[in-house]
Image (cartoon, rainbow, N blue to C red; front, side):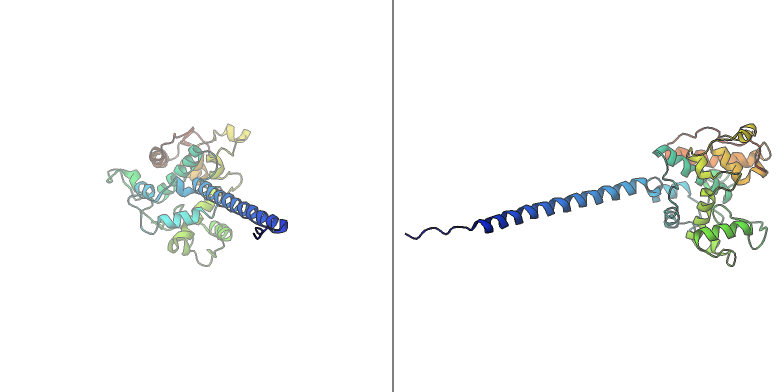
Length: 268
């Protein structure tokens, strides 16, 4: 009888090596896939859109002008690392509530007996009603005003806002970017609103003497303290606080300390 065919040891070794390499490649691919999924999930969890969803955005701003679209806000927000993504979930929520509180006051169309209450009318105006410092009058969510702010904001977001200031009221992404730029940028001696609301700022001795402590109230001082704080215009300060508290309630987060600036001296 013929002998059974014998496999050469080299072929056997090559076969085993090939099988092992195949399993190894599959394992590497699986790990890479899992890492990619995990990273994407983590990025989503850390994004502004994980807190301010499209549905919540519409609830927060039921009377907003269509110009202020959710997609424009998210696109602008993603251009600023750290905005709405710094700290734990409560810190992130509180910062976003503060940002929308201040910008809603700046663009409000509400009045005392407005349907839904005056705090339901944020993001109603795109441009300043009584235009000042033309052509660099208030535009967009933060109502960016004055040539020096247009120049600095434009440089930061790579847009020529000095030559074409109207971009802030015609391009919604640029409009939101100018507001977030202002929020994120320190203008000495004032800290950035971002650092205040994320616990990255502490008062100096001069700040303590002036009653300036961390909290939403200090962001009011940063934005318009010379006109409103230290008891100057309590109704306007209250309106800012009402917007902020409304959004904190919608985000299920506490207000934190020092929500107003009634006892704070302005920076200038």
